[in-house]
Length: 168
Image (cartoon, rainbow, N blue to C red; front, side):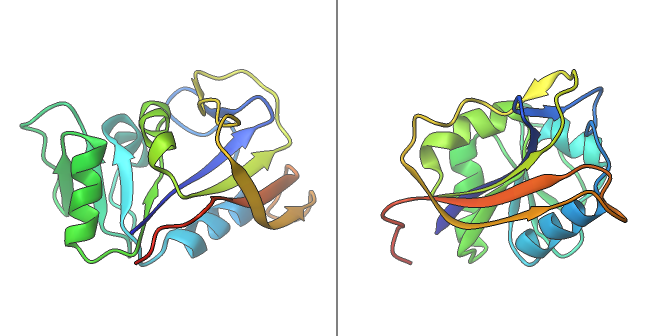
């Protein structure tokens, strides 16, 4: 199974502010949906509670330290490793880690792919994507979106891969 992360971040790696995103980018949301739809998403408890519900069309595994935590329509895991095993048990070929900051940090060594969006934004916030440049990433796909309708901030998307990818 391929283990991927998907994140939109500001130029300073900012990913969160006051329990939400520091921007509203409908075209980037559509991009996120297109990439993750039909795949297992793995999220931390705080991130899940910010979302407020399971994402439609994506089996959700919530990682929490609380063994009594439960959420209707979701799977719960006590560690990233347990979450990855649940994704495998569900027959997943590519699982997506979708945040938050602590979960991204623990997932970095396990990642094969990183679907990275860098938003033209440098404001304050309280959650940051962890440093990731120490890993051997190769850009295999890239495009940019300029400011326009449903896109108040410019952003650039890159698909980064570690090589080689696992078989199966």
